[in-house]
Picture (tube, one colour):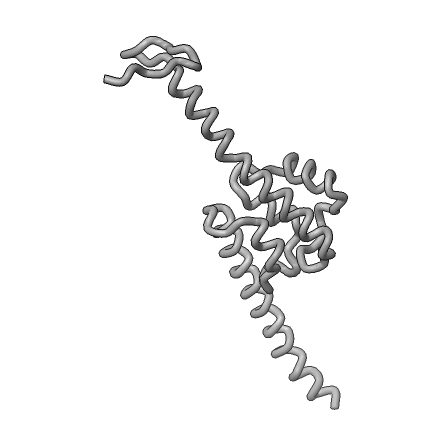
Length: 140
């Protein structure tokens, strides 16, 4: 009887390793998609795919471009969500609050890019002097 249990333990161990590798690879792919803006963190939080169930919320948030530990902590602290909380264990209220916050921050991002583009437009270059921020180029 002890012999049978020892034989069954090895395949179970190998199955656990195989599953862990499959989850790791799937998470890496999920993080790549979030990083490449093919998928938003808000979508992942709301949909909670199987590969994200045991992932920490901070890992997901930090996979977004320009999101580091400080920004992640600040957002999660404002919502009362611990950094190491797993996405699969978020309550419905936490899930919707986090998704709404992420969507609001994503909506504000293009406006910031527009300001940066306008600042670059008014900057001096070697072939033209700097223009005032409200200056409109004359139509020819």
